[in-house]
Image (cartoon, rainbow, N blue to C red; front, side, top):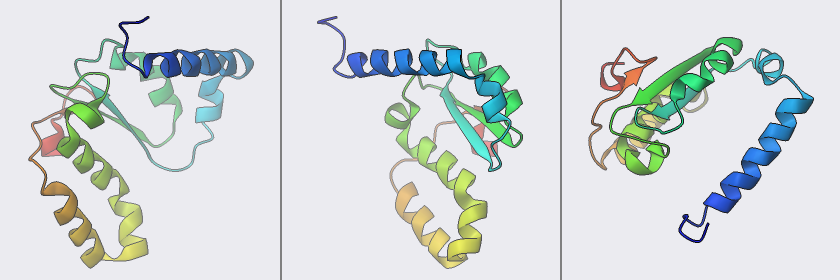
Length: 131
């Protein structure tokens, strides 16, 4: 344990709590009640296979999965520009109604000036850059 990163203990505690919830309620039944769009983001090189979420993905009525190439368990840290693009794309429909296109364009310009994305794929097939 002394060689693990500082967040490892927090992750272990979170996993224990999630497992307890899993035993008390079928998460797939709860997921079926979600009414908003959901985008699941995974790294292609995550040691925890992104396919482990298949049943949850299938249970959520309006869910999609994006898998980023060259990313592991923390795509937001390993691929920040590509992650920003995924988040902007996922939020765009809701933001257009609330803020208008000029504000959306300003936010996109600001967030995407970092570095260009390096690719990824949706549901293991489509590259995120092509989405």
